[in-house]
Image (tube, rainbow, N blue to C red; front, side):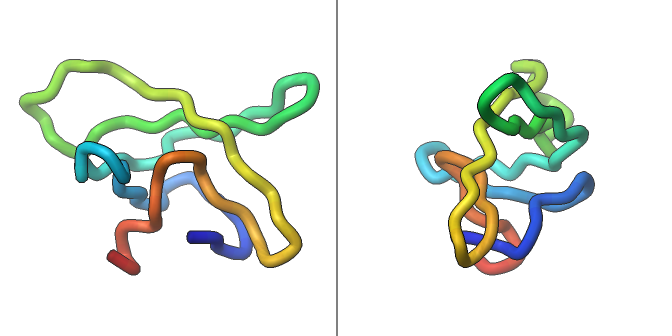
Length: 71
């Protein structure tokens, strides 16, 4: 699922596990952009996840995630 722009504070759902994450920050590497994601569940102590931001002509998306508001 693509949105116009990935922003901090957006909630994204992991396609495999169904767990919901919040985008805490975005940063650019040499050739790609990445989103730093933090789980919404307090009892989970996995830490942060890093996922690649995919850019298409129709907008942006996060690899392996769908926008939680649209699920």
